Image 1: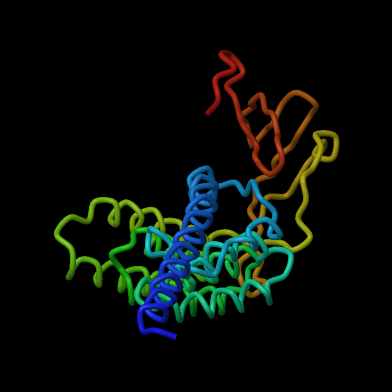
Image 2: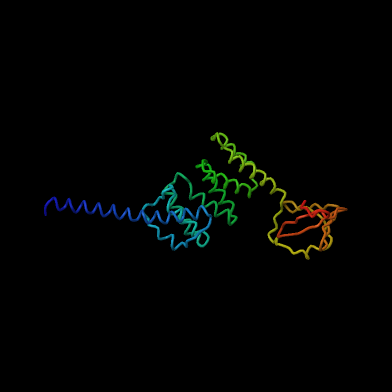
Length: 255
């Protein structure tokens, strides 16, 4: 056979390969558009079976996010192991933006696995601090851990690197105050919502601190079907879940 024949075969093969890659890229772009809408709306509109049909070429999306990382949120609640494997692969495809670590930290925070959430959010933040979402997530983990010293350290790290940091400052103030507030809140594992009738009667006011220490106050509070009383003060009230709203008797204005 002549050289021209082999040359034509080579050219045809290259054109076919390029056309096939362009076709896969086109299909991938269509899925990526749907996923980006889901990310924007913070709502998953597709099943993992649908998302799994995204072609493996290209392995990084138009926004530089790895395709496997875009798939992971659609399976992470049903099968964390599969999601973890996807995110590990995604980290290898683009190890510079730490999006996989961000998603893992978000998941572990949701299920209150704070050690793992801290590990991945710390890694995501300190390796890619320019992403504000990394900073906010890290602060949320530190809030849960009541780690005010690390909240201060993380903001100091931002302070040294960015001139414009207003949004970082707002997150810092919010997380620092919330972390300090958690020292005053005792969380009961068997806590539940109550109905108004369950509150009727007199109650001894007390504080319970971490470690089990209980401090009883001298004054008592009481509930009737209409009024809440604390000492000589009487108020109207309503209750929803764990929130008690007190109102002035004369104006019904919430205090």
